[in-house]
Length: 207
Image (cartoon, rainbow, N blue to C red):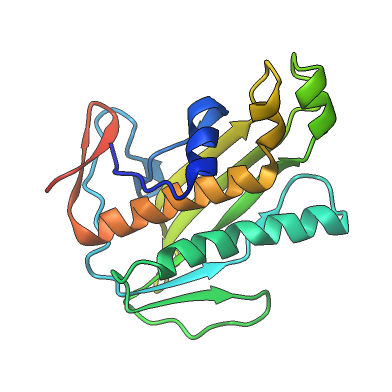
């Protein structure tokens, strides 16, 4: 399994008790996810030295200003995590309509947020049993800038702990986005630094 970098005790707590998961980044070949039996291929970003992260599309069905602003943060968090590592020569967060020039050595990270529900902290603390739950779902694509083809994917599916209490109260959509962004960025960096081979349906780092 890909090595994960989890920053801060808050993210550790979220990872331990939040329901759902952020899937390992999986190679895609001709539109076929390589977790499918018989299609497994190595995943390597060794030939890329530049990453452009684009704003994620809002596919939640909620076009409110608060949700749009929240959705925009996810790409920013991924870019920030990638910038904190020196594996890539350049990491750019592309604003909508910016059209950053692309090169043959550029990776594009984009995708869509499909669920963004803040829930209610008080209900999570005092009631539990799923009341006031927070949710964050997203589809993450890593694409080759020259062809535009998707070469890797990850799926985020996170929600607060159903039993409630102080831990569930602290599990906000923002904490989910930060945790998922850290994991996605870590996988991208791992695929840049070493060859990634699939094994038993999971992507494994080869040292």
